[in-house]
Image (cartoon, rainbow, N blue to C red; front, side):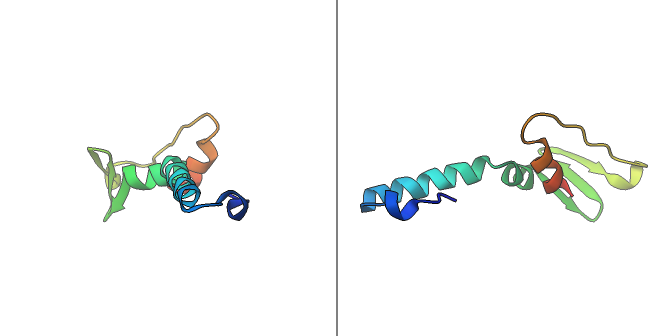
Amino acid sequence: MIRNESALARSARHEHALRSIEAGIEAAHPRTVVESALSLTDGLLSVGDEQYRLGEFEEVLVLGGGKPAGQVAAALE
């Protein structure tokens, strides 16, 4: 993820800091957030603490906005 990691990682402390930064960025990535908040098992959609039986709906619409909207939509597909 960090393109010039080898140039920046001049010591073990720098390497540790870079790994921590990468982990934080990955944890905040829209795909990671969607995958941790949503699950679909046997037609049961879980969103946080809520659950929905998808068979009870004709369609499900997802609305979104902002910079991460495209990445969230891709993660939902």
